[in-house]
Image 1 (spheres, protein in one colour):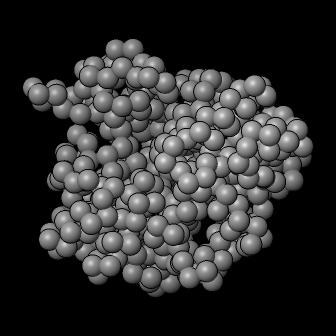
Image 2 (spheres, rainbow, N blue to C red):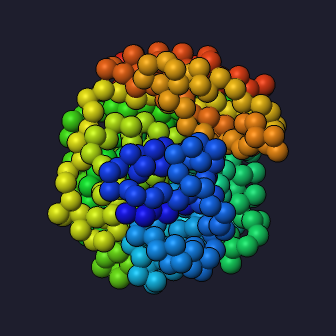
Length: 427
Ligand code: GLY
């Protein structure tokens, strides 16, 4: 099978490793890719947000399967254009991608499907935001309606900060009518569960937990994610079944009933609250960095699973099998992240880290300079992944790997997967 994978971050490097390792993969193209994917696949230059360009390229290269990594191409209609030229595509149509592209739309679907989620109000003025904040109380949860590259959500007890964020979202240009979603705060630990969907059927992957704040102890600003681990020993064994029954299947039925069936990853961002399971958000693609710990635990081929989903044949696909071991990833971020980052600094130590047993390094924000040297080129630069028999072993390996990496000014959290024994679901 010839596969075209779209994207250039850590998620795509992690997916590329698994796709390249699948015996059905004859050729793997990654657009635009990064130095990590260049080592295991062929990177190609392509505007991945241009539906016509992606479909034309895939057709001209006789690609069998297109896998879309990030959300922006999906919202732009890349999956529709690829499907229109008869090529299998793993990723939802633009209409179905609104589950991530509009928080208000996701709430509408959840209400129609009876999916448990936080109470919310969609606001178009600051007065409406103030009213909603008053009625829900602190902490305030303010979400931009549209895609915001990981900067759309603010959770704070500071009403001034909450209103300032809402004001920023309401003046955003390029949207017909900027909207803000104000939500009730959900207590309890968060879980990411990726559900592979073919429009009708759903195959769940294993749950993971992401660390969204920049600093140890869940302090500091929100980020795209500073680390992750899997499995989650504190989550009940029936969690995945409950998510399928109460969230994923009802959403699939609702989307199909509207004539916009969902194909791709339905990323269920969940909170396990004192009042039970609640959906925090949906994304329509694999999570980053959670993919870096979920995919290495997969013992069955990934390409075949994604192709089955893209072709609407999940019901006949082999059930995924999983390693009993654990995986932990720690993000090495550039100075300044998640604000303005410094880039162009040499990145070294990857080979030393990968010489350690059970350690591999994922490229997230790197590039080659004119001399071919590896330099930083983004906020999240590398993800160091440790695997082992237990979370403790995986964690120790990940941090041994991080200690080998050299990048001036870089920072990382020191507590990824450190307090797993004390995670509890509020009662
Ligand atoms: N790690 C959060 C996300 O992928 O959106």
